[in-house]
Length: 137
Image 1: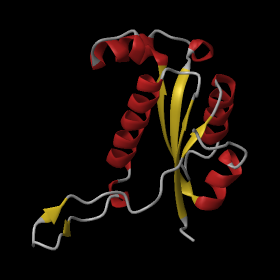
Image 2: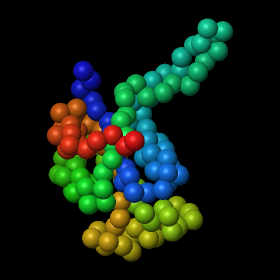
Image 3: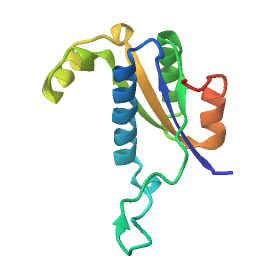
Image 4: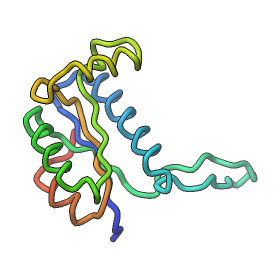
């Protein structure tokens, strides 16, 4: 069993396209923060190279708006152990990274609505925080 566990948690009440986009954004950001999770390029049978993919499974779990908020708070308590990536609903109202940054800077924590989170770290800690969440189906 891997000592590292990564999960993505998304609010299942979002429209399907937003769910897919949230998963993509969180996974890409997680890959930036934890590049060792992405394996090297692999040869195929014809000698061509295929781009490396994640070396660990990344289950996508479901979490309500309140569960996402609670999970984020709980994960922040273990910030030295965990990598936490979050995506807020500000992305639905902004059209550039600069607008997103400005909206985040102007929004109180209590008013932030999370679309999803990605967590990666010691398997035991990640399971402790997310073990009660079901798969997003």
